[in-house]
Image 1: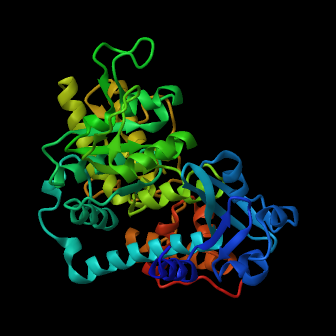
Image 2: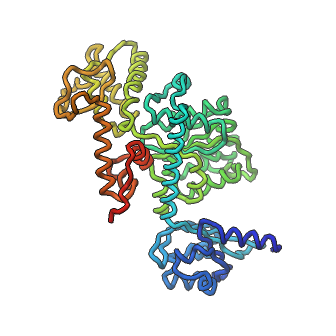
Length: 476
């Protein structure tokens, strides 16, 4: 190694945010980053005088990821508990010289750091939203006409649509986050339509629906004779089919670890090799992924690769659940009703009393559940009026829900608490602020509040800023 190479390596190790370990093929520690001492409870000098075998035996590394690489000769990732009681995500990679293992380089990230990164992402998203509001971009006219089947009447969804439109011309990977049914696939399609690849294919893949045994052949394709039953002439995989367009991988959190490794290699190399073939094929597609799971927590549990998480989490876009954007419900209902009337050749309308249920439900299945409910109600209605309760159900008397203009009943639901002259919107905002203010004094973090309310952590950050609230850091 030249002098400049040595200086570059030294600078990387000493300034890296992650905690680096470099060990030789026998397990002797050659070097560690200075910050590793705080995590592992030993000075840098003491660590460099020992071996990973001894550190594992002493409980400093529980277990040692470097030893796993030495045993298998392959990269490894695992959860590690250190001698100081910290839990870290550790990754290690082999270094070969002339076909023989020469060294192992590992890095670890304290899960506290991972949580801080998540909070930074949420704050960045909030700052972007604030910028849109200050600049008036969120009120940009004509946005709805470009959105085809999407509804963005609520402010938060307009901001998300504008963010997607801004990143669409780039090649950056977009990670769609949100509960099942919130519309991640629809927004991925819209991103494709706004991108320079709009004339290319949009390949929609549900990772959770492909059996692990078929994943390689379906995703990477195969050549003739690759396995028993292979189609004559072979077959292009889904990745190749996305050439020149967009590859959308839904439910990416369901991908088994071995398949995550293969996907990461394709993303890094930009090539794919069909099963039974030796010739790599160059790929050219835009990658968009989605999940309803917390990938960071899956990383903590050792179920998702940290390096793949970094690769995918370039532009995170969190779609809020329908219960947090009820302003979008009327538009979604109107669009679905129009589709149903066109499909079945009738012109049905929604009765006034049905809007109370539509606007009052929490819709845990989000847009998908709303659309399915409407189709059932449409089909079960005996005439051209959809009342929504034609199945013998009673409308709850304690439902308090905003109802779109033109559909509100004359009598307010029983049990509401609203000040004289106070609008429904103001009453809901006041109630929301009171709930959040109470939780800020009881719970220690935005993650805890999100768990308590059953909403996303970025939504909590956004709502706290909207109401001018902060968590009481004096909570024990």
